[in-house]
Amino acid sequence: MPPLQPPAPFVIERLVRLALEEDAGRGDVTTAACVPPSLIGAATLRARAALVLCGVPLVREVYRQVDPRVQVRAIAEDGARLDAGDDAVALSGPAAALLLGERVALNFAQRLSGIATTTRRFVDALPEGSRTRIADTRKTTPLLRALERYAVRAGGAHNHREDLSSAVLIKDNHVAAAGGIEQAIARARAYAPHTSRIECEVDTEAQLAVALGAGADVILLDNFDDAAVRRAVATTAGRAILEASGNVTLERVRSLAEAGVDVISVGALTHSAPAADLGLDWEPA
Picture 1: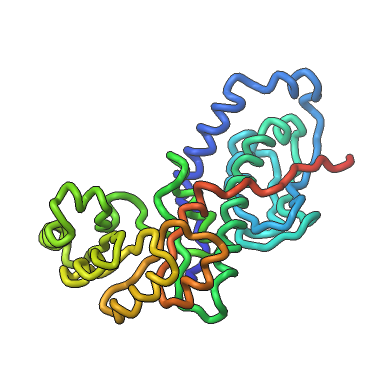
Picture 2: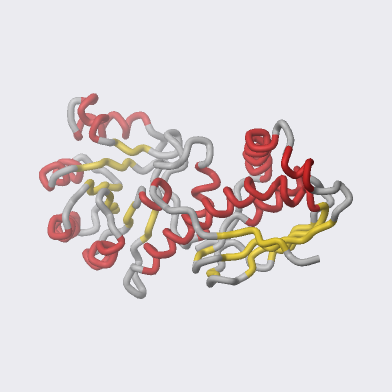
C-alpha cells in the first residue's frame, strides 16, 4: 500500500466549514452562558472501544477554524489500531472553543474511524499472503466521498473508481440500454481512451462467457455464490481481472479470495459501517 494521504486541504477546509456552519453558525448559547471567555481548558480524544483511528486532520481543521489558539497534538496517527482507553488527540486552549468544536470534531472522527475499523476487519479476513484486494464502491454519503474513501485507505483497503468519469464500468442497466453486453463493450471500446480498461458487470455464467468473448478487461461477478465464483475463475483462466461484488459478508471473504478473484468490492465499508466509539474527555485543571 502507498503511504496514507488525506484528502486535499481545500476539501477538508470546505467540509469542516460547512459542518461548523450547520452546528454553530448562530453561536453556542450553552457555552456562552456557562463558560467564562478567559477560561483555558484541556481535553483528550480517547477511544472507548477497540478501533482503527481516522480523522485526525479533520479534528485539527475543526479547531483551526473555531479558534487558532487551540493546540492540537496527535498522539496517534490515522490508520493506528487503538484499544479502549487509548488516547488519540490532546487538545488545549480556550475552553469555549474546545466545547464549541466538540461535536463536529467527534462526528468526523467517529464516522471515519468507524469506516476504517470495518474496513480493517475485511482486510484482516483475507488469507495470509493473499493477492486479492478489498475495495470500496461509490455507495458513499453525498459530498463526503473523499473523506470516506480516505477512511477506507486508513483501514488498509483500496478505492474503486472515484466517480463516473474515472473508468468505464458497464452495469446491467447499461447493457439493457445498449441492447446487450457485446454492443455495450464494443461502444465503450470505441469511445474510451486507449489507456482505459473496460469493466463489465455480469449476473450469470452465460453472461461471463459473452463478456470474455467481447474482450472485457475486467469482469464484475455480481451476486455469484462461492461455487459459481470458482467456476468463473476457472473459465476466465486469467483472461480478465475478476471482481466479486454483491452480498459480500465478512464470513465470505476468505472463500472468495481462495477461489482466486482479484478484487472483492464491498459497499458495506462505507454505507453500513457503524460509528466508532470515541469520546472527548475533559481533563482536570
